[in-house]
Length: 139
Image (cartoon, rainbow, N blue to C red; front, top):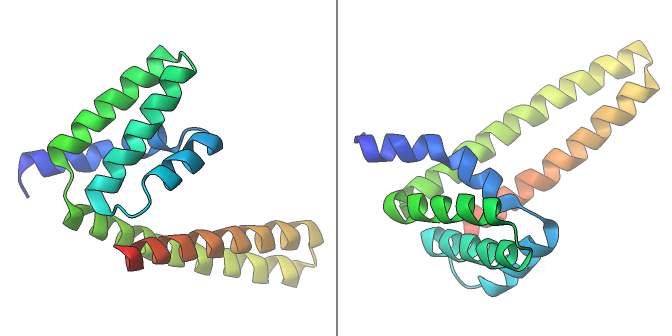
């Protein structure tokens, strides 16, 4: 793997954290970027987050998002994003198995508080897995 792709791999978590932002900005980004896939969608979503941060007069966030956009434009590939989704799906499946084991243990111990906790974690993880699978299928 060449150095630029390795460098990008390390910037993805930071990029993701910056892009996640607030719910309302994400909803706007989603509707504005519908129909785009892969890197083009990622660029659109970051640009939408920049617009939102500028309207909120959040200079630090704008600067961080502009850096993230530049990094994405320099290093993003659709193949990389597709593989990232596949990796996230595999991690989510693994997490589900772990939560199920924890749930089974909590049930065996009769700990209703932990049972409820792990049922919620499982439900949340299933929703995330479904979203990841949908994103991959739309790729």
